[in-house]
Amino acid sequence: MKNNRNISSWSPTSWRNYKAAQQPEYEDKAQVLACLETLRGKPPITTRGEVDRLRMELADAAEGRRFVLHGGDCAECFADCRADVLMSTLQVLLQMSMVLTYATRKPVTRIGRIAGQYAKPRSQAYEVVDGVNLPVYRGDLINRHDATAEARKADPSRMMSGYHHATASLNYIRALIEGGYADLHHPKRWDLAFIKKSKNRVAYKKIVDAITDAIQFMDTIGAVDSSERLRRISFYTSHEALLLPYEEAMTRRETGGEYYNLGAHYLWLGYRTSDINGAHVEYLRGLRNPLGVKVGPGHSPEAIVRLIRSFDPDGIPGRVTLITRFGASNIGRMLPPVIKAVQKAEVPVLWSCDPMHGNTEVLADGRKTRRLKNIFSELEQCFHIHGAMGSSLGGVHFEQTGGAVTECIGGSLKSARQLEHYETVCDPRLNGAQALEMAFLIARMLR
Ligand code: PEP
Ligand code: CO
Image 1 (tube, rainbow, N blue to C red):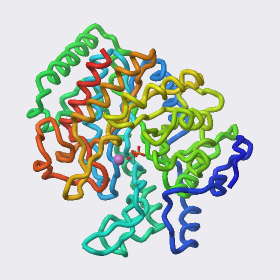
Image 2 (image 1 turned 90 degrees about the horizontal axis):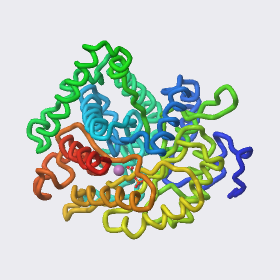
Image 3 (image 1 turned 120 degrees about the vertical axis):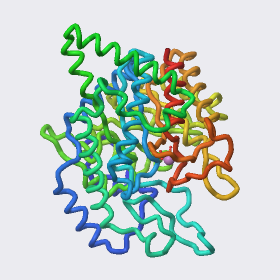
């Protein structure tokens, strides 16, 4: 294994000299190579200009001038590449950002776990289903969820499908936004059925009315610039950089010699692939994209500083988002030493809180769930700890869907018995009402 990580030794393929965790075993190696060759010739999904713009927005958020909402599905499925699913996920994110912008008077950057969030790290390589030992499902980019040996085989052609589904999804989202769907002149268009039943409906309606009023006023006095700005928003796409051959094939060399992964705007390093000597760290360090780094109970403050330095030796603003996911019962003890170490090392980061992944529980029937009370507790503690230490929380990272699912306990869902609409293929997600409740909590914290 190599260990001299200077930038001159990096290339889009240099990760292959390092140990890569969480990779599938493909039977047909020739087919893998053929798929990657085809992918390399495909047009990119994003552009360098957009990626650079996001990095600047994240730099702003690190300075407290913006807030970042980073959310979407845990594991997107190809079958969910549908207008209704994409639109409702976008609606919830738009509603959340409207609540935040209104409450804080700060712009919000929206990043979706969408249009490419197809590969999942797993804690076990095998699982027993109805007495049969099967390889685990690793996300639609790799295999199928059905519980058969055939479905669970890693299939290289799914990388091609992943590219096409990501492209179709982002194309639709871009068209919605360009066509004025996110226009603040008509926030009522985003109303989903759940709003009527939500305990936040009155507060939400007040915001919508106040915004509509303000916009009408601007239109009346002819404040054309501001009004025009409200018609367009920016929206960015992200996923966990997990399946390295795919990510390598989506890497493009731009004029000037810099490398960008143009399969997304933003990529993150997962908790389970954060070995500082591993292949994922090697691959990501050579890109110009802004990066998320998930850290939790398994990382020491020193290890976290080393990770940040390996991605950002030059201290580029907006380059690294540190996404902490300690869990409600650990954060009080574990976050302060990390903030202290990062402050002492003077490495600039944007702090984000993932209050989901440290608060997962397994029910007696084997399903995973999360309690809103723990999710909200971690988030509140995170705001308070940063505030008390002269630091600031600039974003949140969460798993949400626009569908009327019941996967997390809390809000109007009082107990595990009510988890009737449990649809996730991986982690439990917030439904629209729960996500909106979280937005109101964040708004209170930021005020
Ligand atoms: C995820 O974000 O879906 C995930 C697996 O998170 P983590 O790597 O933090 O466990
Ligand atoms: Co998850």
